Length: 414
Image (cartoon, rainbow, N blue to C red; front, side, top):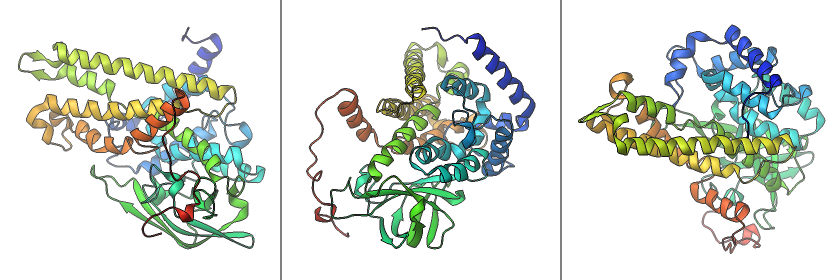
């Protein structure tokens, strides 16, 4: 397989590189280069503000949401052109963090199931960075088992009234709109009584409570709904078909997480090239080299697996269960690399702070953040089940509640 650019791809790369060189906020380059492991924090800027500015500039230059159709704010670019852009954008791509859920998960779902009016109203503003979207799926009692959710939507005239709670909602505190899945029929099995909506996050009755994380960030939130009114025009897909709609979101989520997640491989190579152990540089130690070789091989495997997914998308196919492979491997590798880096540091591994050149605090932040990556978008166990059943064709787990009406499933507090 030849991965060299074709003449057309080389011309596209040169155009993209020239535009980025002329427009990127180069004053942020150093900070962005150091903030890839565990968190993105800028000393003198708010990531949402600078992210919106960069997204708007890209939109005006016709570089935002490249793969989207032009009529919805994109460029109509090919999948490989999107890859080339991401390669050239480099560290500046981290500025798009507030928009990744909207661009990678919510947008494709609206594009697939929304009305033409909804697509033309909401997608261009999402692409331009004017409006930010979040994803309202997980609940305190329905994380990996999303279909067990309790948030309910009741039809009243031309509207739906929503009551319930969501949790671990990334970016809800600065989002304008959200993709919401709710239970509309408790009398049928849990996967069949769900419906998908999108709503204005500033609607009366929506309350967002930020969650303080172990690494000091506040990226996740609890979201409460009290008699929140959603027009039926903001329903995505048929009533009761929310689970089918959600599969588009979830598969795009796993692809997005797996493709953008910083595994720490380049940083680990640099770290080991400069770290002195008792008998010399860490990079010269056979045990360390063996670890690095293994991670380098996995990192390349992730890259080429994502190319396979891109090929499927280029044919107009829905992202498949193979997306779970990238998310599963990258999440585990992130945690393994952080743990090993701290082991190599010895006693210095307990330290963290701003002096990263001395204590390598980036790996501490990486370790504190890594557990969330093994949960977000589906736990390791869920992903292994998906791979086993849908990729390898193995028998499925026994699910005793599969055909039981939701309101007949024994549980506490319902």
